[in-house]
Picture 1: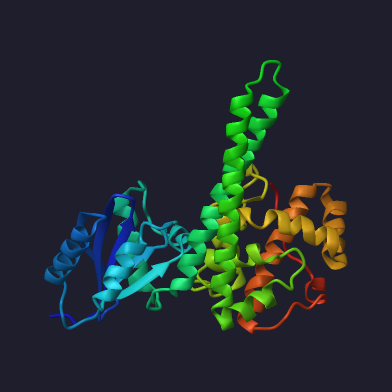
Picture 2 (picture 1 turned 45 degrees about the vertical axis):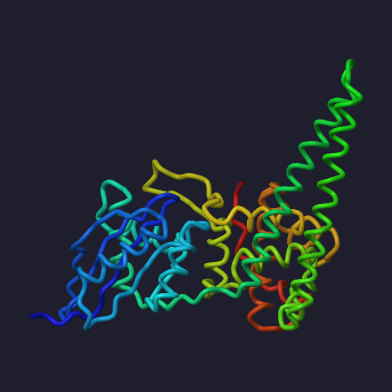
Length: 346
């Protein structure tokens, strides 16, 4: 009997179900994906999944559960497996999608996706996932709640403006809209205070926030959102991964002389992270000479302001990662180095 070197459980996570494939690698580096099943994405489904895996795998070789970081749908399963002393690895979605393109897959389904994840786990050396600190989860929930309130308030203000300028307006409707806006203002203030309390209560995090907030355009709320959405850069190993995770990476399709598309940002990433970088980029261009110089230089080359703004967004996001990892304050001369983001198009 061949000796197994690796066993993996590839899990394609959806809102309501878990599509699972099992893979194994023997001593001859031969890979086999040999079993497939679907489980509900519930605690009862988690238990059934573990029982099924235990029956299908050998106890002599470690089994690793591999899944994508799909929004929040994977989190309950990851925590459950970790609490039951299972080896878990969570991979950024762009890594799996890039790997899947190298496979001879003609039809992409949930089953083929789980098989690709299982194979990825066998071929790559993955790090064990550990649950992020509770403070990151709390801050992420607060930041997202605040963002929803801001969007709702903007909608109400637009509605209030329309009612006031209408030829026939309702005073009662205007009063009710004003009260709703006032309530949102109060709730947003409460969230801001709660965020400040969380940061103040963690001395290490408070110091990190000061460092990141030293970057031009990056305020406390922006810094908190970046850290919360990345769980303190838990899965991020380099700047390139971070840019891809935010969906600010460049996608280009070229084939021969007949197929050539303009480079564009993928937008296949964390939209909350991508969205929060827009206004800081504008502020950095307005207030910092170095960023303004980069902006003017890029615009002078191609004449597209939005293209240059996205380049600044990427630069700011990369700087937050660098300062977080190096634990050093912002250096104005750092980004005077050559910039490689000029190929971005919106």
